Structures are given as structure tokens and as C-alpha cells.
Amino acid sequence: MPMNLVIQEKRKELGLTQEQVAEYLNVSTPAVSKWEKGSTSPDLSLLPPLARLLKIDLNTLFCFQQDLSRQEITYFCRDLEQLVREQGIAAGFEAADAKIHEYPHSETLLQCLAFQLDGMLALSGQAADETRPYDDMLGLWYRRLTKSKDCKVRNCAAYMMASRAIQKGDYIRAQEILDAMPNREEVFNGMADKRMLQRKLDLCQGKADAAAKELQDALLGALNKTQLLLFQLIDAELACKNKPAAADLADKASRMAALFDLWEYDSYVGPMQVAVANKQADMCIHIARDMLAAILKPWDMGRSTLFCRIAKENNPKQLLSAALSDFENNPAYGFLQDNPGWKALIDAYKTKCDPLVTPNNEM
Image (cartoon, rainbow, N blue to C red; front, side, top):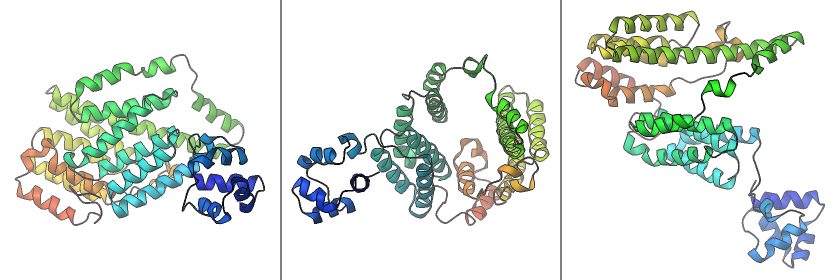
């Protein structure tokens, strides 16, 4: 909360008028009015007596210890997303940085903004040299979060830092971060599963809807993790030169997506990994065509009995720019860059991108 609103709210809480505040501080009433409107600020010499009059300390007056509610953070994140879509990723980082400086002690705000902008930056389709200033800012924010007293916040931030280090090829740094993180077994060994017990309690208390929603959410998380493990296992088998095993895993990953009503796009990821490793140009183009078409089909979670209670609006089209950028810039697809069919496919889908989100350009 800005200082002007602190002055206004605390004055009203105490039942004081602007005239009374002005008289106490020996200033004019219009001066107090301007403070509360935010058009001017009190002189430095007036801050201690103003804080005493309002029965607050200077930290509160300056909002140094003020925190945002979860709802306020949610609203700001929603506005931030709209700002990025309208004015670009640079405006988003500028607004977020200003908000973080306004509420420097809010770890929840810092964590939400770091995760949100990290994801939006990945979807922007910008080249590495364009994203470097934003990467540096995100790195600073994550380092701050690794000093949190909350182990969950620390571990989430460390996870993101290690992931980013791997993406940049800084494997030594990534290993250092991972070595410092506790293993999941060390954290949860010997502890009861609170969430499982909560679902059982909800059912016993007649809260079936709440239990079903929680179970669907847990199932989706487990399925997403299983898919990620399958994709990583495919890469591992390909690295081991075991192409038959990789192809079998890719087939299982595809069938899993269909069996569990997951997003159609996910069914093509494994086969694409295998086709790229085998440098099968025609197969890559065929799969890429299906992948890009799937991006333009929103995932209707509400039609699935597995996810109907947690269904939410989604706009996978935002991924189109990132997918096209990956197809053009990822070295793994280097053998396709001179293929006329590959280039024609990418050019055709560039016209379907959001005009504010195009590959290799700022949002």
C-alpha cells in the first residue's frame, strides 16, 4: 500500500480530519489533501510527527513491513499478464520490479512474479541475446528466494535456478545447486501423507465434491510428472543408442495422453523426440504439422471425467510462438532448416500467431 493510502486510511481510522492533521503538523489543509492523493509527499522533517499522530511507526508509514494479501497478488498478476500482452515483456518486467520494490518483504509476491514472468519469457519466442537482461533479473529474484526461511520457497527457487543453469549449459553450477537441495525422501520420509488423509476426512464428513476436486488435481499432477519422466527416459535411451526402446516409450507416451484425456499436443512429443534423433525429415514434418495443429485446439478439460472439476480456461495458442521459435532455433532441428517443406510449414503457422507474440520478436 503506497504512503498516500497509509496516511489516508490511518487518519480515517483515528477519526481525524485533514484539517486536524494539518493543524497538528503546522501545514495547510490542501497540503495534506495532496499527500493523500499522492501528488506530493510530506517533508522529511514531518515524517516522525506524522507517524506519531497516526500511531504507527516509520516502517509502516513507508510500507517497509506492509504485505499484500493473496487476493491482491492474484489481481496484480492478472493485470501483469494483460500488460505484457498489450505492451510487451519489457513493460511486464518493469512493472513487476516496481511492485517488488514497493513490497520488498513479500516473498509470496516475489515468488509469484518470478514464476509468472519466467513462463511468459519462455513463451515470448525471443532470442537468447534479447532475453539476457530479463534472465539476469530473474536470477536475482530467485537468489533472494533461496535465502527464505521457508524451506518450500527455498527449494522451489533452487529448483528453478538449477533448471535455468541446465538450459544454459552451466552443468557445474546446476550440480552445485542440486547437491545443496534436500532429497524428497529426506523431507517426507516417515511423514504421513496429509493430503491423502484430508481427502479421507472430507469423504467421511460428506464433503465429496471437495475430495473429488482434490483427487483430480492430484491425479493431473501425477500424470504430468509421469509424462515428464517418460520424455526424459526417451532422451536417456536415445543417448544410450537404444532406439527400439526409445520408440516403444514414445508409443507408450502417446497412448497415455489419449488414455488419460490429456492435451492432444502431448501425444506427439515422444514421437518427435525419436524422429529428430533419427533425423527423419519427412516424419518430423508430419509430426510437427500435427503438433502445431494441436496447439490451436484448446484443451477442453471439462469434457473429461478425470478433470471436469478442475477445468479452467486455457489459451494454448500462446505456445505457438514458443514452438515455432524452438523449431527455428533449437540446434536439434538444424538438419531441417534448409528443407523446403519444413520452412513452408513454419512460415504458414507464423501467420496464425498472435500479432503481439511472434517468434524472435518482443511480445
